[in-house]
Length: 164
Image (tube, rainbow, N blue to C red; front, side, top):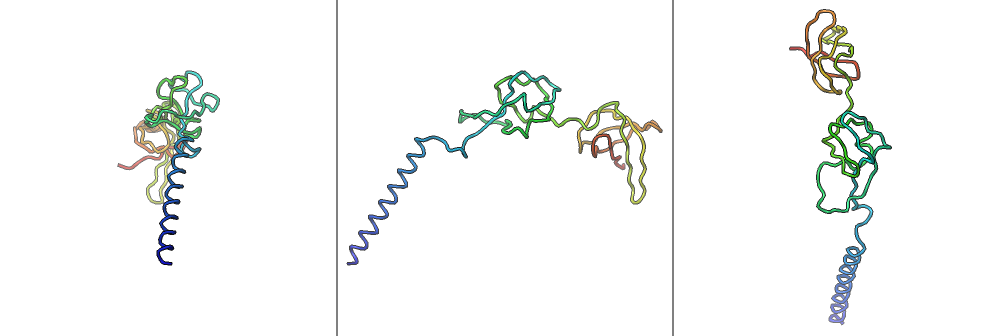
């Protein structure tokens, strides 16, 4: 009786292992599942440096080359509204490193300078000496005093002066 139970358990194990192997083989033949597919964003037309990318200028395509690697964009949210740093060619994957955030402050465009020291807050107008995005440290000339200060861009048109 005991021997029959052992034989039955061995048969169940063999059948389970065979089914597992068969399932794996069927999955390999069927190809990748929806979850394992990779995608890349590609332009539909030439996009030149400095242009803002809109959703109508790009499309999402499936990557079929298993050796394709790099920092390419995979979704619309990664490219829409971004500025190109280099020329983007149609049907070639868009590299994330070839994109940048739009500038929050532009050279020569008037900004509000804010200086905080404890409870003291001073504001003034200034002219940026360079372009920059939110969070970047830039140089700005104070419009009243003519002094050049450094500050961090807080939002479009607002720079917080850093203390020395």
